[in-house]
Amino acid sequence: WQNISNYATRAVPGLRSMFTVGDASTSGQVFDSVSFRGMQIASDDRMLPDSQRGYAPVVRGVAETNAKVEIKQNGYVIYQTTVAPGPFEINDLFPTGYGGDLDVNVTEADGRVRRFTVAYAAVPLSLRPGVTRYSLTVGKVRDTSLHTKPTIFQGVAQHGLNNLLTAYGGVLYAENYYALTPGVALNTRLGAIGLDMTHARARIANLPEQTGQSL
Image (tube, rainbow, N blue to C red; front, top):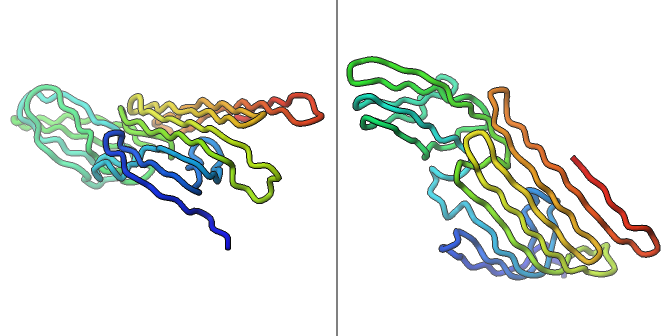
């Protein structure tokens, strides 16, 4: 009898996370997915309200009077609200896809209309400003092609810095091997770009120490 995964989980609401023990796999968001037998604690977006899941930029502006704010994407109204005079912030937009800038119209009480655009293009590693995802995994590698089952530790973190920039990275450590990956996801008017670099070092029996980088 063979199984792909066999595990137990428990919610940790205080950390917005799930604790997993048993045979499972890492997410593969930064490093390649690895099957393991051990423990993992990782953030879970299902503990967020629907309006906070996925990526969407925060829209900020200033109203001079009691104003109506209307947000359009690809010509369709996706959000409308009224705001009091002063600075306003809209951070509960539903993600509507992976492209299409947001056109914002602010209609003042006297009929004046001000318009501006917020760039919106997302790649899988983009997060909303202020949102953090993480995972910590420790256990034995599960791979039938390996003669030995090394113990691994993997830590991954992502954090939305602002509408334009998400930072992410990870570290993977095993017996005679480690890898370190820093990266960023950029949201620009020309589209979204994810860029990261992995530096790895391995010790293999009867061979010199091996190092390499991938971009």
